[in-house]
Length: 269
Image (cartoon, rainbow, N blue to C red):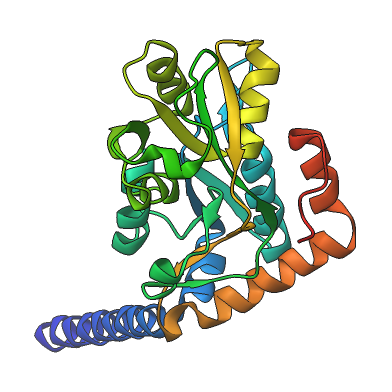
C-alpha cells in the first residue's frame, strides 16, 4: 500500500511537471510572438480614437459610435481576421495609451509630421485634408495665418493644429473638442481656431452656425495615417495594415466611406 501511494505521488509530480512545462512553453511562445500574432491570437484589434471629432468619430442620434475612422478601423480589423474593439479616449492621451499597450493602434485622423515620424512608424496614408483657420464672422483683424501673432487660439493639446497656431505666434488655449473651440471663438474667449477643413465644414453644415467663418486654408496637404510604436514588433502589423488599406482603396471602400462622411473622395492626394 505504501509503495502504491508513493507511485501515485510520483505520477502526480510527473503530471504536474508536464503541466508546468506546457504552461511555460505557451508563455514563452506568446512572449516571442510579434504584435500582429498577439492580436490574431486574441481575436481582436484594440483601436484608440476620440469619439467626439465629427465626422471622423462621433455618436449619432441613437448614441451609436460612427464615423469615417470608425468604419476604416472596423474594415481593417475585418481584413486582419479579427474584431475591432474600439476604445474612446481624449486626444492628449491616445499616444500614451498606444505606447503603454492600452491600444493596439490609433485611428484618429492622425497627421503625418516629421516630429511624429521620429517617434512612430506610420502606415500608408488613407485620406488627405487641409488645415483651415476659423474666426468669428465679424472679425476683421485676422485674414491670414500670419495675423495670428499675438492673438489667442483654441485647440486640442498636442495636436498639429496647436503646433500651427504656436508657429505663427499665437497663444494657444487647450480644449478637448471641436465644439468647445467653436464655442470659444463665438464667445470671443479666443480670436481663432485651427482644424481640419473636413471637420469644420461638417460642423458648419450640421449646426447651421453662421457666427464663425473659414478665413484661410493651408496650402500643404495633410495626410492621415495610422501611427504604430516604432520597432520590429510592429513590422508585420504595419505591413498587414498597409495591405488592408490597399485592398480597401482598390475595391472602392475607402472612397465610399469618404463620400459618406465627408461628401467627397479625400482618399487620393
